[in-house]
Length: 153
Image: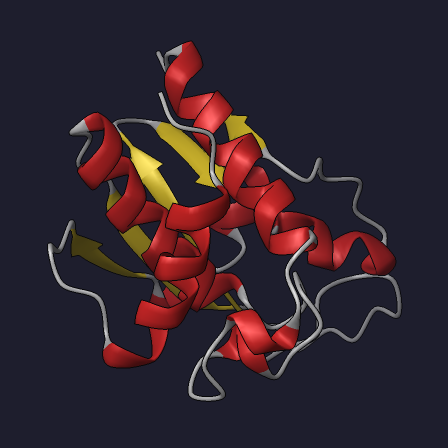
């Protein structure tokens, strides 16, 4: 079960990223060039994983995968689409799943759920990576921004 502090940190990170500007991020990360949350799931998940570990001592698993299908349905995820999220035990932590809401889904902006139906769509090629204490260099500016704006606990 996810505790209240995890959910609150996820909400605060999501809100901070929504209120950020491109200049708060490096041009070497998706947050500096894309329209959050669209196309930002990988970098966002890596940052959130690092923050959960640094602030709460929680080790999550970073997951990413690609959806493959021979069927073409206008209101669903396109074949070849990728997505990234975190897992903690059997719980999904995803603060960018709502980027797919224009494809017929209705995900909240902060998803903390045991329901894996959506994420299992990407499972054919899902890569799982344990918690890392290092961020790639392009994410340091975003983390510095978040450190400035996130509430202190």
